[in-house]
Length: 290
Ligand SMILES: NC(=O)c1ccc[n+]([C@@H]2O[C@H](COP(=O)([O-])OP(=O)(O)OC[C@H]3O[C@@H](n4cnc5c(N)ncnc54)[C@H](OP(=O)(O)O)[C@@H]3O)[C@@H](O)[C@H]2O)c1
Image (tube, protein in one colour):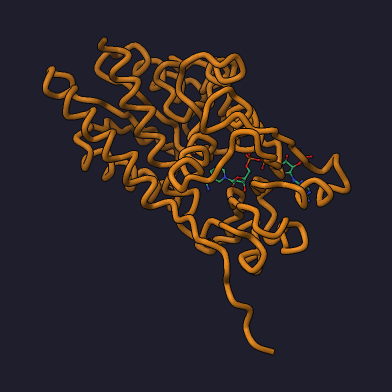
């Protein structure tokens, strides 16, 4: 049997990220011209290699954009009070505009409790409960990065979203739930009819098969197969599972035979997520220095 031919248009995240980061760089330059150096602080707890790698990527990106990036590395045995002391100190420091706690943190620590002591205006991940509340209410604030990156990706490739049927598989706090709120907002790049499906909806393919835009946010490798996709639909793969260095996406590659447009297996949503982190950071620096 011959190999299936890919027909879908590919939607790589890199050009989207480059466009966003070019704008961030311009805004950072304008801030520096006013004597304000944007600062994105990073906190790593423990010695997980992958997490240390992600921090290095973010610090390199910060340097490339003309940010400074103060960094704290706490040992794996650090207590909750140690973590919260760092976050509080940065929250009180006017020279720090944004911060992130690299996730995951060691299991004895409470990530949500740590996040709660952060100044929400400096929360570049957009995951603080106040920022989730702002998102729900349509108030300005740092947006969760992966959902914001997906909206930017769809806009970049002129995929119509307004008035279209968007189905999201997964209602997790990082991706599915905030993305549903974002894409239902009244705005030309959103304004969609959004449906969220999950394990409570046993016949979820009934919903995904009618989606103009199907977004996988489950973290279950290969859960989205061609028979779950409406021919010609746009498919965005957000959910992934990591096995060591291997990336196992939710969307099976064969979906490209049915979809009209699809994010690539690697290099789809990921680059846009990092770009949004810096967009949140430069926005925080501007808001702190009107
Ligand atoms: N690419 C990126 O940059 C990026 C960034 C952040 C997150 N992610 C990925 O996004 C994914 C979602 O993360 P999250 O934290 O938002 O979600 P999460 O807390 O891991 O939740 C997963 C969601 O998927 C649903 N689900 C799982 N298995 C299912 C099944 N067999 N059938 C139907 N629904 C199923 C779950 O349903 P229930 O609620 O019913 O349990 C849940 O709502 C993860 O894979 C994560 O790695 C990617």
